[in-house]
Image (cartoon, rainbow, N blue to C red; front, top):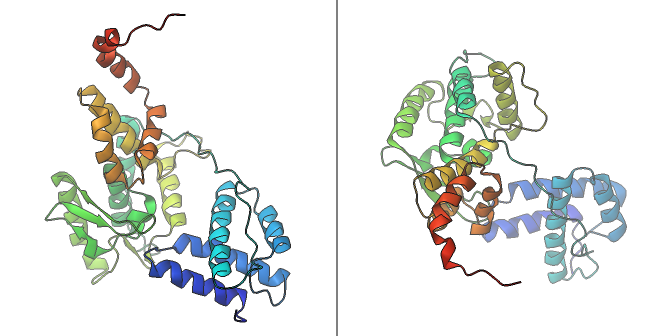
Length: 315
């Protein structure tokens, strides 16, 4: 066992994760937050110890998502260190925290969608936010039309966008997996016009939706969504919903409704939706069945001819 510091060991761990195909950006931030705290709490610390880790988890206990993510990262980190000979690295016990329960997603009405994008198309140039009047309407249209995760749109690189061939490659978004999504001719035409204009402001850019800092941060996307949603709906009281991420929920919801209304076999279509959205399993996509009010009346009429095939169970 060597005598590296906790920070050095954390850096080695990140290098290892990326060497096996993980992007690991979000997890790196969570791990570094722990390292910052641990180094102040315990001089000369080399690996996670119980007292420091327990105190840190208590400190972030009110942020359910951060807590859950931090526990997952720290357990992987300790497992990595133990394999390298740090037998004292504290392993957080399984089921220490529960996976956060997501709030119900927000599903947009057609009127809301139309009003929101009308407001986006009215954005004026602002020298403090170079290109925002072009980027924001295009970025949110891509989220709406394709159900991408916000990060997938924010960090989309120009080299992965193939408008002429009607597809976009989403590279290593969640875990080491990548996928190809196909887009409509209408969306391709819109994005081609956007690209022609944004190239004048950001020639030779790396990111498809550029900012002066390189690409838009998650905070910037959230802030812009709220800003222009409030412009479209001044009397709307925003609590935690809607959010930009709800375009992804809406995409799944709308497709399930459309397939059911068209009489398609929804079960047969689910794997396509799963792959398109980058879900790891069909169960993640099935989550949306809980939030499809229009689906159940349609499904009831579709399944009525099959009712006699299932015999009644005697009491």
